Image (cartoon, rainbow, N blue to C red):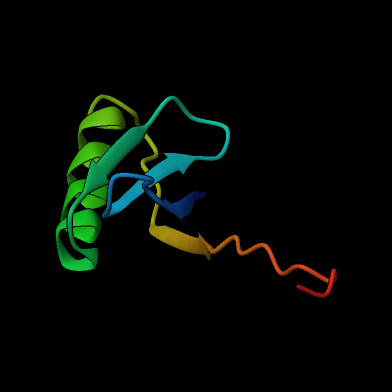
Length: 71
């Protein structure tokens, strides 16, 4: 089993991440810190599980609004 995280830009800066199908959430100021936080949160979430995940997938979503109306 693998765990998939949806990663998005936080409005106040940095990133936040949410695991799909699991109650795991975390945030960080940098990408490196976010990766560390995700690994730690995932390890803690599954520490009593007999079959913990073998990999974590990060899916980064960036939302941007482009206007088609001439200014």
